[in-house]
Every structure is written in structure tokens, then in C-alpha cells.
Length: 249
Image (tube, rainbow, N blue to C red; front, top):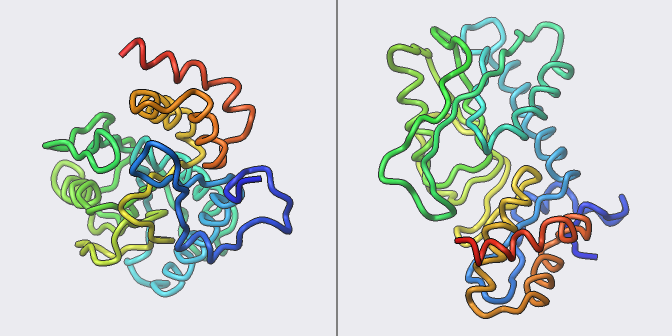
């Protein structure tokens, strides 16, 4: 059983500290490593983030520095954002202020390591942030360009946020300087493709054709997916569709 699989016995689950500096899996016909995030790890990570936020809220109790809004950057932050909403709504202490969640769609990357020339707003901001401390929720902070762009947009007119901070699942560099406070769970190398629970099919559709075009057999592609941690039901339901994309593109 791959160590990054969803289907592991509780005693075999990898501990939280492993996921802070995880190792991606090497596969055939690909220069990238792949980090498959199991469901249980996603929940552990969000719980860690929520505890950090609660500590920050306690630190700023009685001031106007407490977080009152959270903006999830779509699509990447929707899953961690929803899980964070669950923790913030039901796990906060009674004297902590309620936090309103919203969404904001910004596209800055075509794919891993492929930034667009200019970011593009693809979904308008869904909540009012004027005068509030806003936490920007991201799944990945790479070079910080998306976060900086969102910060600049939210703090300017017509939105008028007072201050922002960044909450991210992973960073891809420990040395990237951000223009705001950052709560990031872990760090992964630049050559690692992170497969969160919300993009497992997407990764198959992009990477299986890539492997086939580089001469890997369909059997080899299946073995890559199994090595990464993909469960049988995802492979059986989506593998052939991924193979057909080579012919259709």
C-alpha cells in the first residue's frame, strides 16, 4: 500500500510532522515528484491551521487586530477553506468574533511553474471586506505573486480592507518574502506537484497524456498512479478518459 494512500490503517497513518516536510514520489517519464495528500492528512493540516488562528485571535483579544473575514481564493483554497470554516465556526472560543467566509477567483498560473503574464480575476469578491482584517486562504504559496496581487486588490478601492494576512497549506520556498504575515503549514520543494483531494482527477487528465506522449505504456502510466497513491476506484473510473485526451488534444 503506498504510504500516501487514503486507505491506510490508523496505526499506519503518517504523523502530522511528516506532512510539514513531506517527500514527493518519483515516477517514470516525468521530471516532477508527486505528493498525494490523503483525506486524513488534509484534515490534520486544517486543524493545525485553525489552532494557529485561534492563538492569533487570543493574542489580539480586545483590539481591532482580530480576523473578521476570510477570503478563499478559488479554486485551490475551496477545500481547505470549507474545512477551515467548519473549525472556525464550531471550534472557536465563545469570546472570539465570528468570521465571515467568502470567495474571490484569481488565476495566475497555467500549471505548476507556469505563471501567466498577468493575473486575471475570474470570480468577483463575494463579501464586503471594507475596514476589516482579512485572511487570504490559499492552498499553495509559491513565489507569493497571487497573494500579493490579492492583497493589493483587497486593500485598494473599491474593496478597502484594512489589513491582510495569508493562510496557506504549503509554501514552495522558505525564503520567499511576503508583504503580510503568513500562517503556512509546511514546505515542499519546487519540483513537487501537490495533489490535493480536490484535484486528483485533474492531475490524471494532465499527467497521463504527458507520460504517454513521452513513450510510457498504459501499464506504466497505471503503475505511476499506483506508486503516487491513487486508489483503484479513481484509476478504474478515470484512467481511460485520461488516455483519450492524447488523441483529442
